Image 1 (cartoon, one colour):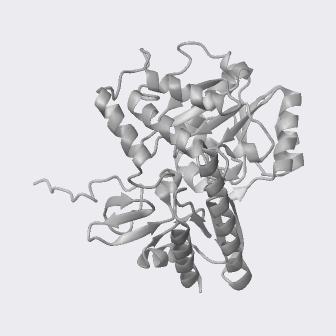
Image 2 (cartoon, rainbow, N blue to C red):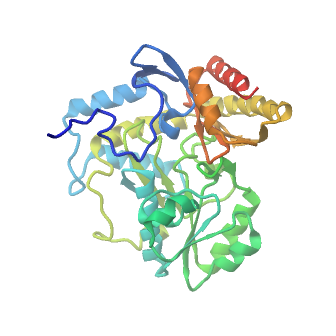
Image 3 (cartoon, rainbow, N blue to C red):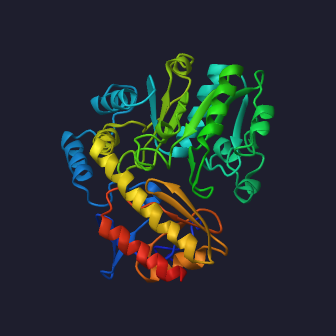
Length: 387
């Protein structure tokens, strides 16, 4: 006799799900099935930039559903995707945009694009990186425990020490290297802003050797650092930029932004996507991008980020458990002198949701629309947990 699995046991156990069953959300709070409200400093791992039940997202979804067009396929033109591409081009360095469904897909596509553009096979990534869990992006991700069970991975991808000037000079080859890929602010690697001076050196080095620069802004892009794109705060402009998490307000969507030079190497048939840039997700994403890009919205993110960074710095000054606090905008990591997981659980018991970024780092990535009083409440809980 076949046993009918429970709702939870029917799911493949590649996540260790914890806590309550969430049934609703509003603003920066999630609501459990028993009515308990949780202050969310995770935001779907940086996805829900506009929080929950935001009027912009809800209105965009309702308009898209009203048209009857959820999917058409990229065999045909639809207005929403073309308008979104124009918006991203107008607001960035890029000349062309490719849409897909996730950050890992965006990075996989970027790898293909730069290999086709350059005619060279090698990609250089850096220590602390996280670019995805597909076969090429996993090869560029500095997590040996994630990589080893699935080897052999895609060849031709190297990981070298981050912010090591000599190492990158040695690794980047005019004859072999197609591109380097770097997160301006590493997310899973511990919430680490990368030194802008070193990024400038990498840019100059790549220019001199005919190598493309890819910025992975899947987690740190689209307002998270207080600028629409994190590269704007570094003084360094990439050739290729990948986006995903907050792009479509919680719907699955990724994007690759490219210069005209890289885009010119691609022709119909070189890459494809069934669902990428469909009318529903693209219509929502257009309104999300316009909302986040508003100067007053980004100014508020910077203001709240400065307050949060200053308050968190006091944790480092006053607590033996806190080794370092680092971040930018509304993306912060609190590195502890002991494992972070017990403190995530303790915060959840006090109705605050936080995440980790490696074994010993608490990661705080609340919705960008979070109110000041909610930030204060959340940090107060965190101070109690770490006391």
